[in-house]
Image (spheres, rainbow, N blue to C red):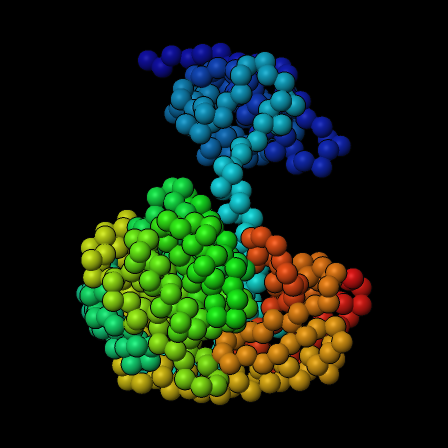
Length: 495
């Protein structure tokens, strides 16, 4: 026997036919509000759709759509042969957000979730720079000249009949042949001393930084960071709760003397010695040895982001800092995003032998294993010489484009933007006259489709000079000219 209940009247429900809100949405919101306010209690039977439509003088379909939405979200439930009832148990998220009965609507609207101080800061330091391949996005490689035919053939080799480990995950540290290829490549190209067991494959340099920060530091540990410096490094460190210690640079790189005075017992230092980001300074051999001596004495670690080390246009590059480390203090990281293409999302860490197990354990907690989709092809791309050949071609192209950028800027903006050639890298700094707001200039350029990030936002403390970061690697000459012309027009209106 089915026990029937009289449907509860919904006398306060009304609709406004002059409002922009669709009628079904007004019905939905009115019933939901009555449920949340407690006017419609759990297990209360609602009027039938036909009855409610008649009471409101709307089509039955309007009410049916509103009821369907309430049903989908868990506010009501249907009982076969008995009608529609307010759910006995509302969704958990609704209970936690349910306002007190009788609370004023204005109070509920004013109550908004808040982030932690750290969360607000981290959310605020993200940058649109380098997220789209336009003039002058820093760090974007030339994509049109990548050997995609060779890459496609290597992918097909591994994915026509994929190995089981590509389908189920494999080693937490990455595909072993790829790790071996990376170790061999780094040994030959960068004098990095390691074997495959010390290499961990990750989803780019940002994940490498995040992983290293999780393993090496505790909340409130002091960490030296280059000032100015890479925003991604700051984000990873702040996410781990570090206390950042800004350390300025001179013509030889990070000032170890300044760091010693400010935080002699810091736990960690993060550096970009091959090509400082963003200023382009190359750390001298003397300064590298000085930094390693301090790390040994302070029982500290060094994160070496070997940024832009592949693209050096004059002289021989200095060996990686890691290759000079005899004490197991340096964690070396790199990425294939700039030497191949950003969408590949593969990078690597080289860690001291004593830390391999710890890094592997934490790596597994992040996402179990790196994506296997391209690792086999990348191992062959490196091992069969395609990567080295591509880097040689791009090195010549980027040297040419650096010269083109300097020529175009000097011809159009020589009195307003000062640029000088550098021995390495994928971008130049265009320095501005004193008093020019580089942040406002960068935003005005971005509004017109040109990416030229401000130098000042990369400083934690005082900004001695203002300027714009001008990436040239992925910018052909015609686009370069258009970008500089846009900057010239923008600079007419920004003082």
